[in-house]
Image (cartoon, rainbow, N blue to C red; front, side, top):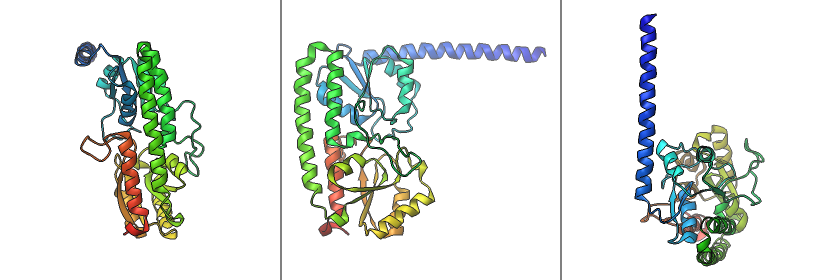
Length: 315
């Protein structure tokens, strides 16, 4: 009994010591983060790199924009680190996509109630997932439509002006210029994808992340799982997709950069389709990669679609 009490007391002392050390390390880390950032500028923290790029185009050099998740990271099931939480406490604004995409971000907003946030999809009429366990839930990948991305820009503009009223004219000008680029992108994608014959307008991917793009440009969409990650791949879903690819003579199928393409490669092998390469959706590539910005991400994906689905280039 005496030994047991001593062990409990020692355990409490050790836990208390760890708690003190953790708090000290968090405070030191927070001071380090603040010293490494230019605190003459407000810090805008986004949940993933695509939102960071869009934000930077409006923020220009008046705000510091950082992404919580790094390039190449799967964002649906991301697990925030203690460092992420400390980083978020240094932010002046947190930018989220919403529509259930990054539920993990609640850890930031719940623990940093004084930090304002903007949810870019609020006010959008979302596309709903059909025919799956997610039936009726919103598809969160609204930014994949250049038209919806313009809506994101307007939300960011409002949030940045509230954060830094002195920069209103600056942000308005940046937003105007970037929205013009997105409008031109919309025209470019529409013209490119309109070339695909009607009997080949099937866009088959790993995740149902292209619903908005498919709706905008008249494509039929099919996928291995509707949302989240490849852990949702089942034999039934694979067989259903293989059957669809065969019945519609779909020449090429694709997958996304942040998930494993193993199951999709098996679908290609079993259906006789070619694997057309890797799309970027939830994450940008490194600067030397094919999708260093949101606009280049869209152009890269459309290039792969054309290479895979146009008759003259099909394998």
